[in-house]
Length: 224
Image (cartoon, rainbow, N blue to C red; front, side, top):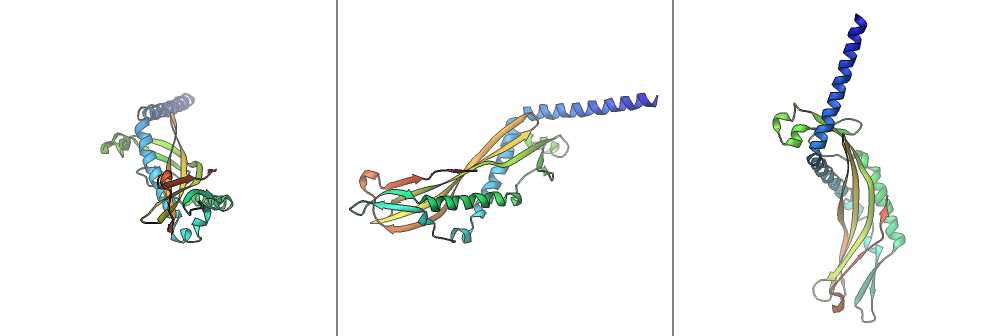
């Protein structure tokens, strides 16, 4: 008799677990787009803040970053092209990539949902449905986020006429980031592109009319 009760109890527990998993999968699929939008918004915002503060004043002033580029003039002294000194450029990109991954564990993700120690987030259904009554009482959809699953970096340079016989030279670091989101019934990749102004300088010079008074140049990309 006791054996039958134990078997019946075990079957009930298994059915409850299966029913819960099926419901979570169904809800996740039904609310897939809204769930992805909520997670993507929070993660992209947090990564932007992290990258922004990673390049603080001390980092930016640690060296003359405009040494990364070469400004080429014609015989008349007009600026006609921009090149990169790749030995210096790749050294800086490698250091920046190392800094990005080294401190990823301390990155704080702004979120409206609970997080476990192993990095799994539980998004309340009420948050997805924008229903405050279900925010604490309804299902919570588990989501696993793999931050910075793919990263590539490169430089972008802009030179344009600035006033009379002056040029404004700007050097930007371009960071393209991809992340993975896994939840019951869905696998979603999302990311963002970030541009950080590393250095700017006003120099004496001129860009010929036939170049449109602006020269832009992008470097090769370094990928993780």
